[in-house]
Length: 97
Image (cartoon, rainbow, N blue to C red; front, side, top):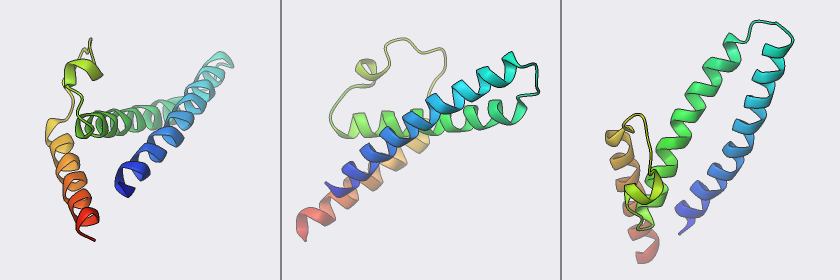
């Protein structure tokens, strides 16, 4: 249960960081400055957030179709399955303890 709580907290904090990063990107673009660093950081963080969000939701019993109804690209299933396996293993360890 602790792993789920840690992941949930990470998702909440990272969601706030993504909003701040999007706003910084918009403000930089509006001022006419180069925003390459913001774009790179945003893309990397969005990919990581999406992967962890899908793994967290699926580990809690939701189907992929319930999590993302419309998607233009496939998520990183390999990484999602690895995260779900880690969450399941740690949940079993915590249940035994």
